[in-house]
Length: 209
Ligand code: TYD
Image (cartoon, rainbow, N blue to C red; front, side, top):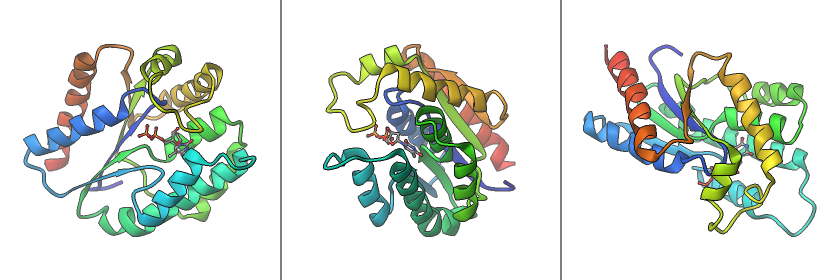
Protein backbone atom coordinates (compact mmCIF):
# COMPACT_ATOMS: atom_id res chain seq x y z
CA UNK A 1 0.00 0.00 0.00
CA UNK A 2 1.23 3.42 -0.94
CA UNK A 3 2.53 5.64 1.86
CA UNK A 4 1.19 3.48 4.68
CA UNK A 5 3.46 2.37 7.50
CA UNK A 6 2.00 -0.85 8.77
CA UNK A 7 4.35 -3.39 10.36
CA UNK A 8 3.25 -6.82 11.60
CA UNK A 9 5.09 -9.36 13.75
CA UNK A 10 4.11 -13.00 13.33
CA UNK A 11 5.09 -16.42 14.60
CA UNK A 12 3.84 -19.45 16.50
CA UNK A 13 3.23 -19.22 20.25
CA UNK A 14 6.53 -18.86 22.09
CA UNK A 15 8.42 -17.45 19.09
CA UNK A 16 9.13 -14.19 20.95
CA UNK A 17 6.66 -11.81 19.28
CA UNK A 18 5.90 -9.84 22.44
CA UNK A 19 9.59 -9.19 23.18
CA UNK A 20 10.28 -8.25 19.57
CA UNK A 21 7.28 -5.89 19.40
CA UNK A 22 8.56 -4.08 22.50
CA UNK A 23 11.99 -3.89 20.87
CA UNK A 24 10.49 -2.39 17.68
CA UNK A 25 8.69 0.19 19.85
CA UNK A 26 12.08 1.13 21.32
CA UNK A 27 13.43 1.58 17.77
CA UNK A 28 10.57 3.97 16.98
CA UNK A 29 11.50 5.92 20.11
CA UNK A 30 15.16 5.97 19.04
CA UNK A 31 14.17 7.40 15.65
CA UNK A 32 11.86 9.96 17.36
CA UNK A 33 8.78 8.53 15.69
CA UNK A 34 5.90 9.44 17.98
CA UNK A 35 2.73 8.81 16.02
CA UNK A 36 2.77 5.07 16.59
CA UNK A 37 -0.17 2.81 17.38
CA UNK A 38 0.63 -0.58 18.88
CA UNK A 39 -2.10 -3.20 18.56
CA UNK A 40 -2.42 -6.94 18.97
CA UNK A 41 -4.73 -9.52 17.41
CA UNK A 42 -7.26 -10.71 18.25
CA UNK A 43 -8.13 -7.69 20.38
CA UNK A 44 -7.16 -4.03 20.82
CA UNK A 45 -10.69 -2.56 20.87
CA UNK A 46 -13.13 -3.04 23.78
CA UNK A 47 -15.31 -5.50 21.85
CA UNK A 48 -12.37 -7.30 20.23
CA UNK A 49 -10.78 -7.77 23.68
CA UNK A 50 -13.96 -9.53 24.84
CA UNK A 51 -13.78 -11.76 21.77
CA UNK A 52 -10.09 -12.44 22.52
CA UNK A 53 -11.03 -13.75 25.96
CA UNK A 54 -13.63 -16.07 24.39
CA UNK A 55 -11.10 -17.38 21.87
CA UNK A 56 -8.34 -17.96 24.40
CA UNK A 57 -10.17 -19.12 27.50
CA UNK A 58 -13.55 -20.69 26.60
CA UNK A 59 -13.79 -24.15 28.07
CA UNK A 60 -17.47 -24.52 28.99
CA UNK A 61 -18.47 -26.40 25.85
CA UNK A 62 -17.23 -27.74 22.54
CA UNK A 63 -15.56 -24.90 20.67
CA UNK A 64 -15.48 -25.67 16.96
CA UNK A 65 -12.80 -24.48 14.56
CA UNK A 66 -15.55 -22.70 12.61
CA UNK A 67 -16.62 -20.73 15.72
CA UNK A 68 -12.99 -19.85 16.34
CA UNK A 69 -12.63 -18.64 12.75
CA UNK A 70 -15.75 -16.47 12.84
CA UNK A 71 -14.80 -14.91 16.18
CA UNK A 72 -11.32 -14.09 14.89
CA UNK A 73 -12.76 -12.31 11.85
CA UNK A 74 -15.36 -10.50 13.98
CA UNK A 75 -12.53 -9.22 16.19
CA UNK A 76 -10.52 -8.20 13.10
CA UNK A 77 -13.47 -6.25 11.71
CA UNK A 78 -13.79 -4.31 14.99
CA UNK A 79 -10.09 -3.50 14.80
CA UNK A 80 -10.22 -2.51 11.13
CA UNK A 81 -13.24 -0.25 11.54
CA UNK A 82 -12.24 1.38 14.80
CA UNK A 83 -8.46 1.67 14.60
CA UNK A 84 -6.74 0.56 11.42
CA UNK A 85 -8.90 2.23 8.76
CA UNK A 86 -9.17 5.59 10.62
CA UNK A 87 -5.44 5.74 11.43
CA UNK A 88 -3.65 3.99 8.56
CA UNK A 89 -2.90 7.18 6.62
CA UNK A 90 -1.67 9.26 9.54
CA UNK A 91 0.07 6.82 11.88
CA UNK A 92 2.68 4.12 12.03
CA UNK A 93 0.90 0.93 13.04
CA UNK A 94 2.68 -1.98 14.69
CA UNK A 95 0.60 -5.12 15.14
CA UNK A 96 1.36 -8.26 17.13
CA UNK A 97 -0.31 -10.70 14.65
CA UNK A 98 -2.70 -9.95 11.75
CA UNK A 99 -4.37 -11.83 8.92
CA UNK A 100 -1.36 -14.08 8.29
CA UNK A 101 -2.07 -15.67 11.70
CA UNK A 102 -5.50 -16.72 10.43
CA UNK A 103 -3.98 -18.32 7.37
CA UNK A 104 -1.32 -20.17 9.38
CA UNK A 105 -3.46 -21.19 12.39
CA UNK A 106 -6.88 -21.68 10.82
CA UNK A 107 -5.92 -23.07 7.38
CA UNK A 108 -2.56 -24.63 8.25
CA UNK A 109 -3.28 -25.70 11.82
CA UNK A 110 -7.03 -26.32 11.94
CA UNK A 111 -7.50 -27.41 8.34
CA UNK A 112 -10.13 -24.80 7.42
CA UNK A 113 -10.67 -24.55 3.67
CA UNK A 114 -8.82 -21.56 2.18
CA UNK A 115 -11.89 -20.44 0.25
CA UNK A 116 -13.67 -19.70 3.55
CA UNK A 117 -10.87 -17.39 4.60
CA UNK A 118 -10.93 -15.67 1.21
CA UNK A 119 -14.67 -15.18 1.65
CA UNK A 120 -14.25 -13.67 5.11
CA UNK A 121 -11.41 -11.38 4.03
CA UNK A 122 -13.70 -10.09 1.31
CA UNK A 123 -16.74 -9.95 3.63
CA UNK A 124 -14.98 -7.68 6.14
CA UNK A 125 -13.50 -5.68 3.21
CA UNK A 126 -9.99 -6.27 4.36
CA UNK A 127 -7.98 -4.62 1.63
CA UNK A 128 -5.34 -3.30 4.01
CA UNK A 129 -2.09 -5.21 3.75
CA UNK A 130 0.94 -4.75 5.98
CA UNK A 131 3.90 -3.03 4.30
CA UNK A 132 6.21 -5.40 6.09
CA UNK A 133 5.75 -8.54 8.15
CA UNK A 134 8.46 -9.97 10.35
CA UNK A 135 7.88 -13.68 10.67
CA UNK A 136 9.77 -15.17 13.62
CA UNK A 137 10.43 -18.71 12.49
CA UNK A 138 11.03 -21.25 15.24
CA UNK A 139 10.98 -25.00 15.72
CA UNK A 140 7.90 -25.81 17.86
CA UNK A 141 9.99 -28.07 20.08
CA UNK A 142 11.98 -24.99 21.12
CA UNK A 143 8.99 -22.60 21.33
CA UNK A 144 6.94 -24.98 23.48
CA UNK A 145 9.94 -25.44 25.73
CA UNK A 146 10.09 -21.65 26.13
CA UNK A 147 6.44 -21.35 27.19
CA UNK A 148 6.24 -24.52 29.26
CA UNK A 149 6.11 -22.68 32.60
CA UNK A 150 3.34 -20.31 31.36
CA UNK A 151 -0.32 -20.78 32.31
CA UNK A 152 -1.38 -22.00 28.85
CA UNK A 153 -4.52 -20.82 27.05
CA UNK A 154 -6.77 -23.01 24.87
CA UNK A 155 -4.62 -22.69 21.73
CA UNK A 156 -1.25 -22.85 23.48
CA UNK A 157 -2.29 -26.27 24.82
CA UNK A 158 -2.17 -27.70 21.27
CA UNK A 159 0.41 -30.34 20.29
CA UNK A 160 3.80 -30.05 18.61
CA UNK A 161 2.15 -31.58 15.54
CA UNK A 162 -0.39 -28.73 15.43
CA UNK A 163 2.32 -26.07 15.73
CA UNK A 164 4.42 -27.83 13.07
CA UNK A 165 1.49 -27.53 10.66
CA UNK A 166 1.07 -23.85 11.56
CA UNK A 167 4.80 -23.24 11.05
CA UNK A 168 4.83 -25.00 7.68
CA UNK A 169 1.95 -22.87 6.47
CA UNK A 170 3.69 -19.67 7.62
CA UNK A 171 6.80 -20.73 5.71
CA UNK A 172 4.82 -21.65 2.60
CA UNK A 173 3.26 -18.18 2.41
CA UNK A 174 6.39 -16.31 3.53
CA UNK A 175 8.48 -17.83 0.75
CA UNK A 176 6.05 -16.47 -1.86
CA UNK A 177 5.61 -12.96 -0.47
CA UNK A 178 8.46 -10.44 -0.61
CA UNK A 179 6.89 -8.27 2.11
CA UNK A 180 7.32 -11.10 4.63
CA UNK A 181 10.80 -11.25 6.14
CA UNK A 182 11.71 -14.58 7.70
CA UNK A 183 13.84 -14.23 10.84
CA UNK A 184 15.39 -17.34 12.39
CA UNK A 185 14.06 -17.15 15.95
CA UNK A 186 15.72 -20.38 17.10
CA UNK A 187 18.79 -18.23 17.85
CA UNK A 188 19.44 -16.23 21.00
CA UNK A 189 17.46 -13.04 21.55
CA UNK A 190 20.42 -10.72 20.93
CA UNK A 191 20.99 -12.19 17.45
CA UNK A 192 17.26 -12.01 16.63
CA UNK A 193 17.19 -8.35 17.71
CA UNK A 194 20.13 -7.50 15.41
CA UNK A 195 18.28 -9.04 12.44
CA UNK A 196 15.04 -7.25 13.31
CA UNK A 197 16.85 -3.94 13.79
CA UNK A 198 18.29 -4.18 10.28
CA UNK A 199 14.86 -4.82 8.72
CA UNK A 200 13.08 -2.09 10.68
CA UNK A 201 15.83 0.50 10.22
CA UNK A 202 15.77 -0.06 6.46
CA UNK A 203 12.00 0.26 6.41
CA UNK A 204 12.06 3.46 8.47
CA UNK A 205 14.71 5.04 6.23
CA UNK A 206 12.85 3.99 3.09
CA UNK A 207 9.51 5.28 4.44
CA UNK A 208 10.91 8.69 5.34
CA UNK A 209 12.21 9.46 1.84
P1 TYD B 1 -1.00 -14.53 21.31
O1 TYD B 1 -0.90 -13.42 20.34
O2 TYD B 1 0.00 -15.58 21.17
O3 TYD B 1 -1.07 -13.93 22.74
P2 TYD B 1 -0.07 -13.87 23.94
O4 TYD B 1 0.42 -12.47 23.88
O5 TYD B 1 -0.97 -14.13 25.11
O6 TYD B 1 0.99 -14.91 23.74
O7 TYD B 1 -2.47 -15.17 21.34
C1 TYD B 1 -3.34 -15.19 20.34
C2 TYD B 1 -3.72 -16.60 20.02
O8 TYD B 1 -4.71 -16.58 19.01
C3 TYD B 1 -2.56 -17.42 19.48
O9 TYD B 1 -2.57 -18.72 20.04
C4 TYD B 1 -2.85 -17.56 18.01
C5 TYD B 1 -4.33 -17.38 17.91
N1 TYD B 1 -4.76 -16.75 16.66
C6 TYD B 1 -5.31 -17.52 15.65
O10 TYD B 1 -5.46 -18.75 15.81
N2 TYD B 1 -5.72 -16.92 14.48
C7 TYD B 1 -5.60 -15.58 14.29
O11 TYD B 1 -5.97 -15.07 13.21
C8 TYD B 1 -5.03 -14.79 15.32
C9 TYD B 1 -4.87 -13.31 15.14
C10 TYD B 1 -4.62 -15.42 16.50
